[in-house]
Length: 387
Image (tube, rainbow, N blue to C red):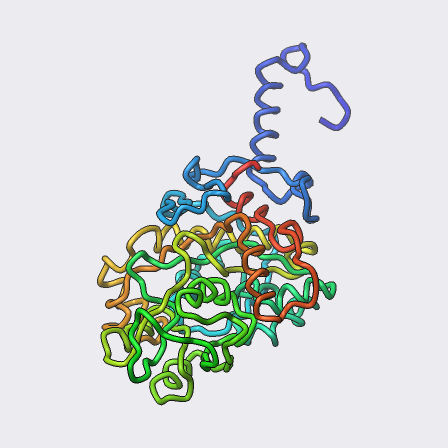
């Protein structure tokens, strides 16, 4: 109006036109999530708005540790994309591209879910110990892994890293977990584990220490008595089968290759209903570009709601698609139950993990409080949940 009263028929701006103008301004503000009311700094000053397709079922109480807990879900296709004003390149490090728990990232990339947010995402294969300093320095933006002992020690050393989203928990019928080669006279009910060599992708200090501690208590062995051998994802099963290690932590669907075979026993796995890994952010997304951090999780969550909401292996064509995408054997992939994909983080998980790391003797100091290891604010904003 350039400083002049807008007169209509000799009168001042009418009530109707004023209300129309205000409504248009309000609509513009609501349609742009990246304006000044959505700060790029982490913290409680960001505006949380309701999200279409994500209601009460899109969030569960973090304190609910029930094994049969129904995971949070939005409607398929939700939360809807909110493209960033400028395209953003992001690099996510992951220890493998072939494991089933990486499938949501592979699908999001293949189906263009990241691109819908204005994100050009690249997946880079790196072991967690190699990725951590790069994450802390901002040379990579996120890590698809878990809050391993190395992560906790990095936090104590000043690394700016947080666990921001979960990945999965096993189906009730899954046997993903600790497998052992039986010696003469042993049975699955009693396997002395002290002194045995364990093959694992991470080695000592992995999150599997927590469920392993529970399993070992039943078999006369503690975490301190195990020898650990770090192996590539493709080598863990081979080492178990050829005797290179006595036991191994086998993921879905790899354990199917020894299930039912004479001489092998399943001792226990990850607690149902409690993800032990997922997405970790460094400073670039925690502090420097929070909008991109929320956008990345929004794409991830939308992928889960659209493609992995329930028993996704009931869709034969989707299993065929996944097998090709992961370069996995389709019959083996079909033979294991669907993972329970879950973007949320349970209360106290990092405390329980640190207790297991302490039992292994791989911690460098006192246990860190959850406020220093976890932030749920990114996925809460993505689904419109007001804490």
